[in-house]
Amino acid sequence: VLVVESGGGLVQAGGSLRLSCEASGSIFSINRMGWYRQTPGNQRELVAEISDSGATIYVDDVKGRFTISGDYGKNTVYLQMNSLKPEDTRVYYCNADVAEYHDLRYKNYWGQGTQVTVSS
Image (tube, rainbow, N blue to C red):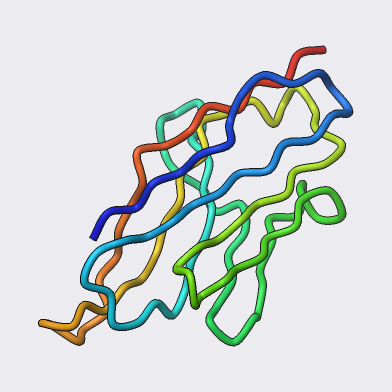
């Protein structure tokens, strides 16, 4: 399974970006996809996630500014980022729980990350 993000870049404070993430491979099912960001201590913390039923979770500091959406038919998740702040500058990672045809157990996969930089 390959997880690939796109859509990062440089934007001014107050601007918007849309991140995209697509999972590919011998995918039987995906039951959750999410976006994480790298912390100054090189950990990854949850930003937002969406289940295959459409249930969403957001970290408090992005509520009302970011919107996660998913198209599980296309194995794709998006993160619409509005009203961006300089403190949103991070590497953002896509994460997915995927079951493959040859092994129906769900396993966790990460993308390579995409840089979001917000200038003041």
